[in-house]
Image (cartoon, rainbow, N blue to C red; front, side, top):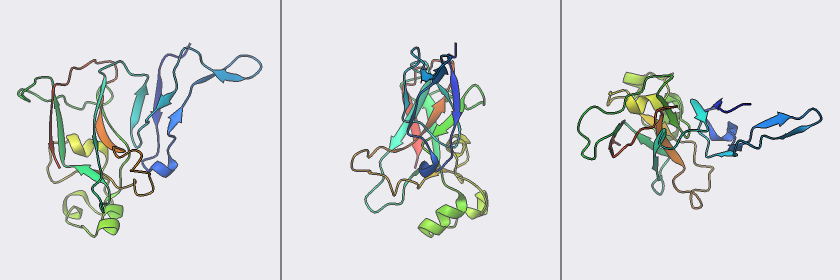
Length: 179
């Protein structure tokens, strides 16, 4: 019996599934695996382990400003203390992996927004993947610009970045971020 699935989707929403189910072959036809609920709100561009234990995945969702191109964070830290003191939860693949709604390439960001200062540190061929929000480097960042075709009136919190801690249940009590 399959109890866990790891998914890695394309970084762009146009090439992602919005939901998925696990099916098993019963000898005659494919049928939904009764012991697994459908998966929804799937991410892109990184591995995601499903189903996750409650408290094993944390994310910050952001709302795109009117007239904006998308959302992004320079740095993001999750803490187990209510005052954000002590050591933040660190990414350490495969046990703790960054996850996101998707991300853009450095070149796509420059072409879309006209901003090019990031080429100096990320390079024109670099990417703004979820790991950049947790790398401790304020000159890199995560950015998701692939929401322009989405219905943001219906779901304004469509851009998000976070951590999948797989089997570690973590009680996040404080979040620090640098936009």
